[in-house]
Every structure is written in C-alpha cells, then in structure tokens.
Length: 227
Image 1 (cartoon, rainbow, N blue to C red):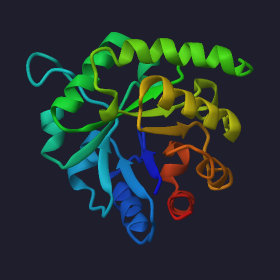
Image 2 (cartoon, helix red, strand yellow):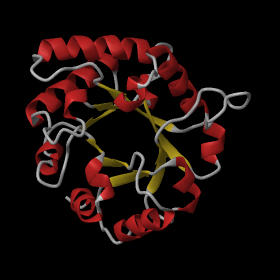
Image 3 (cartoon, rainbow, N blue to C red):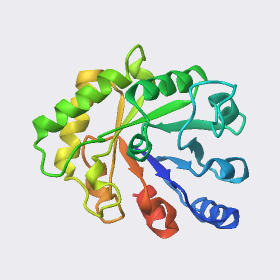
Image 4 (tube, rainbow, N blue to C red):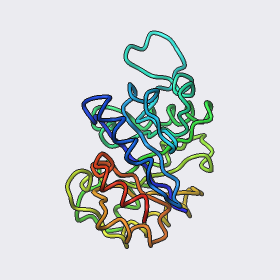
C-alpha cells in the first residue's frame, strides 16, 4: 500500500469547487492510503472518505501570532497529517529551525508530519551533491525529533510545477538514502507527478507521492490514487 497525498495549495477558488472535487474522489476504490490537503478554510467543510491533512501548522498553541494555525486547532477537524517545510514555504522565509519546531508541535498533537526536503537543489546536480544537501537539511530539521514519527517527501525544487519530474531511478536512490541514513520509515516523491509517470515512481522503492497540480484535477488524481 502506497501513501498518496494531494496538496491543493491555494486551490480551488470556491468552497463549492472544493466540495465537488472531494466528492468526485470519494468514488475511487483504491488499495492506497490517500490524504487530501485543502486550504485551511475548507478543512471542516470537506466531506471525504479519505484522511485530511493541513498544508502547514504553527509551533505555538496560542498567543499573539496573527494569521497562524496551531496543531490543536487542526485536530478539532480530524486532521491527521501536516505538510511541513514545503519549498514554497521555505521560499518565503521558513527556516530549518522553524521547521524543526513545527515538526515537534505536530508530533505533540499526534499529527503525522510530512517533511519536505529538496529546497535549493538545482537541475543537473549529481546524486552525491543532492545527498549532501538533503543530509544537511535533515540534520537541522530533525534535531531532537523522533524520525520514526516523520514522513519525508523528497521534492527537488526545480521539478515542482515545471512539468519535468526527476527520474524514478534518482528518486528511488534518494529515498533509499534518506531511509538508511535517518531511519525514516516512509519516503515520498513529489515534483511534477502525473497519471503518466506515477506508475513508474510507485513501482520503485518509494513509499508514495506528494502530488501538487494533478491533485486538483479530479480525473488525473483519480487515476493516480487507483493505480
């Protein structure tokens, strides 16, 4: 059984569209575990047979933190997973130290963190260079964190939204490195996955996919989760 996570990002525009998307996916019969991560506002209003995840969380439980959402708030809406450290969050300022605090907050609230790594990686870097970057990120992100409670998603930043995925062989090699080096139980791949290339990734020693653009296209994501 693979884990397939749909990161809807800032989509869709309306609640009606979000509910329609979730309803269409409810018809899928799959052996895979599926997680939907809609925008915060939609979480309590989505009726899905699949588990729900958030696109982030804050490390404090309450206080003067305008615009933030805590783990305890998310738990009230049956959120089981949280994406942490996505490259789009790192791009606007999330540091490894903040990501470390978010991981601890998620685990404290019994929310499974999906830690994204791969920010800063450039197309054309060889495997050794990639492994060094990944190792540096994970050493900071996982400081004093039980790795057995964390899922890692490898997302080479150049592949996200580009339409050009990394090779399945490279993704597999990276996943195996992360599992062995950091004792991570599950490693996903993300970055321009779609119904055409998903089967190849899932045939490798990769535990699942973190899907962006294709997750908000009902037909595409339906095909991916039912592979």
